[in-house]
Length: 128
Length: 369
Image (cartoon, rainbow over all chains, first blue to last red; front, side, top):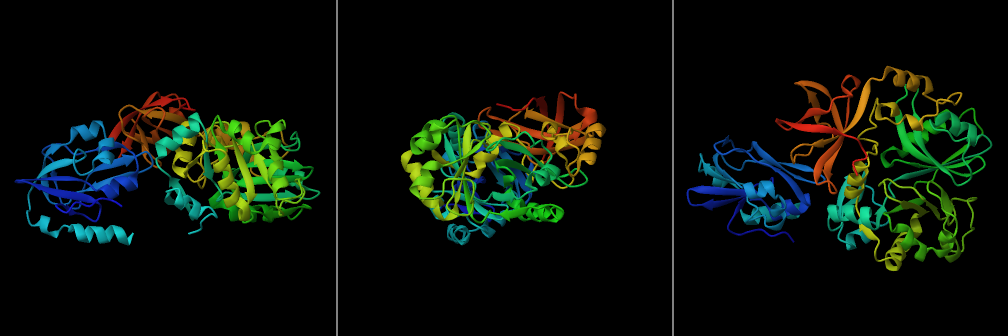
């Protein structure tokens, strides 16, 4: 069973969002990393990039396949996880902690409320 | 979606499944990379029961296969195999196959999963002037590929009688041990009764074997092999793909798509131009002299991975496409195969567009490992 953290919000494309003071952390879920298999490459945006909700902000690749990363909220990138860029396997090992992808400043705070609750995300992945 | 008889067995082994050519097949069990290395270094077993088997027999079987198949079969001895193509009159690949000669005027073909009906119908259509019987045995046979340098050692324990015989690469023999066990007629004569064949062929670039066994017995046979040989590990189609890309082997659906000829992919050695004729011969010979394409191997300079369909550029102009690309578990780099315009065949470096960015790649001779 994939782990779903109670303190996070989720997207239908299997990203998670965590509130961190005025900023937010974004990563991919345990379910996502498990479906992808061994992650070998990560493509992330640059600090200062403005991202709009639902646009792609990068890609995560396993040996077998590539998955786009979708922006959960309108935001500006303030930090990228360079550790995960150089050692992408950390996303498999720790998708909710060391394997976070980007830290952002939300530019439309209302977006956060539209994200999926842990319960909704759980039913989404159980449907499939 | 279709499933092989081993579906539930794979489920118990923890398989993650994927759709491939209409079949629900294991993609990997525990880890694609581990399975890849298992095959390179030791031995792994793939369920490839989705592959098709077609039998051609009758007075004109030789002359019929000779005129439909691109490669030379006249010198084949009983049990020997040849890789080659069925092409249309335009010289384009219908399928790449292995033809095994079972006896005089008796040939057993292994064809691609997504292509069984297509090949069968094409053969039937072209057989009108020949005394041949063409049988699609795909529903009868399941197939296991046991691949890797130690496969021979392990299988010799399970099938001691079979492996006591001289068993050359690219040949097929009966699995006498199974004939005995299931009291079947030990011969190539009747392929639709209990019949067990093993060929020293494969698609991984390692020494290995492909077993053709009846679907109704495959679960038991598979379990017995894994019990007798615990070092042979179940592997999924994910590693089968990365293994073949590292060796530069073409795949139907990636390299061979509508409108591509064997000569586009440096495969002229599987075309016998000394034959009087075969379907597509003139067109293929013209393609060879036109020399429109170069098929090249490449490695990415950074850690990115170029995949099927990505475009290849030289100084900003598009010169071709990636046909297969992956992360190589052995090289730990992105590698791939690309079909480019032959004007650029000597190019050492090019750019590949990966999403929004152009990434640098350099030419490498394949096999990559």
